[in-house]
Length: 182
Image (cartoon, rainbow, N blue to C red; front, side, top):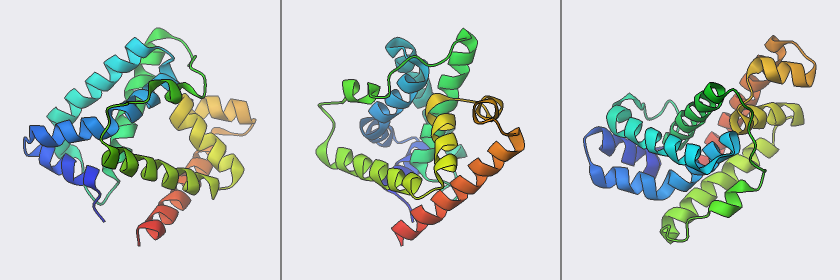
């Protein structure tokens, strides 16, 4: 099932600037929050978000509806860019867990904000339905930007075990999200 974000990405790939604007209105603050949680620096996070939207404009044709949700694809791009920037600085994240609360967008369109909030609640429910260790490593990887090796060290298990937990957790989340869409 295609989401509104998926449709916007398809339109962006066709050169539709209004679709890019709609994506920005819906997801810029979320992507900023992802980058802030990893980087702990507002300016760096804003630079990452700008880079993400330039990338979206240039490479939206690389998005494949049906393989992953458009929102997940965009969050993954933002997460990876933020981690790359963090590693280039040679530092760990510094932002508190509640950093997103300090960067709410008061001008967001209510309907888009509601859709985005609903998607966030759906993902949170899917995470809550996982084995706690699987959910913990997925959160740490996606939010804190930890590598498999760092997670393995933190959890005291082999890297292969971490990879299995992430794989199984994401597979289970996908099943839950697909069931929620049905």
